[in-house]
Image (tube, rainbow, N blue to C red; front, top):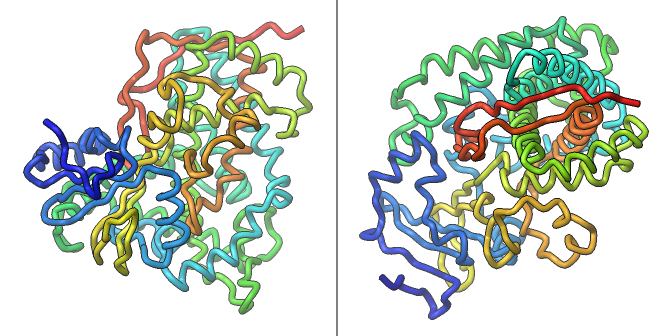
Length: 453
């Protein structure tokens, strides 16, 4: 059946509500929201649909992403798509705040994540990567290793070391389990929001999620209070946040605002990087020639120098293209505007399906193929800027992008220098969205230590 075309432009599709299987979309919200997306997003520039009497616009063309998220940023906000599932834990931190609340926090916190400031975290990243290599080598001698679990543990150790000056201040295993448990119940909050139910409506897991959030906030609040009473007691993210100030007004973060942002970095900064690294190792296990080149680069590099690891950087970027940790993001239209001749009305939704943009036929040759050379400088220069969106776009771009890239490249280089990875499953697991992009089953691999000469 031929689809109706808006404005006689075949790149802009309007899908009438009668063509939608609403039940399938609602089921997908609970199981895998990627399954509920219209398949046209992999080849069209813009797709319109109506879902439960609400207009939804999917934007894929880089120029339209630029116009919407940069030029029209003031016309959009996050609405309930983020606050409903994550607000109980993250409060009013950078990920959930809006307007001036967000702007002044961003100004105050931005210097914390500048490249020069991140140098202090390099030793913690390398040390955690080394411990991970030792654990995986030991476990690999006994049988298959869950690289998913190991990456979660390693990135969490780095967050604990860089946020709170080490593991003595936080129960790493319980906190990591609590974060994962909280994120699992957010699917019901997303469904509640999609169906237009009020925020107070109960759903499975809501009470448990709030208990987890309260515990995490209490524990971090205690740490912040202790550190405020003893300035200079640590050299970590808490120290930097206590000292952070809005350069325009001098305003500093209150304890509750520091907790909001610590939890934001804890959830977003640990889960996303761990998942992306797991996907990366699985890809390398299926591409041994690239893995050998990566080992050679890592063996020759000076530890702690990210500039000495260009292939590791490209490999991780290509893994992020195929498996973006944040596979889509949603904005609410707060003020109407016109995009590509289509009017976006107030309270309609704008969706940027990063997963589809990264595999879009018009943007990438053989989009399903793993090819790190896509990120060689000449290839990047010849591609639209917003064809690659692993950390978002516009003013709400992830503030921790540089931290995540540095952390991932260091972990990858240490592991590839010391270990050899081989995939066990003949077919990669399908991706499943649960706020972040997870494999449908744990990534199990054969791991053995390399003989270093």
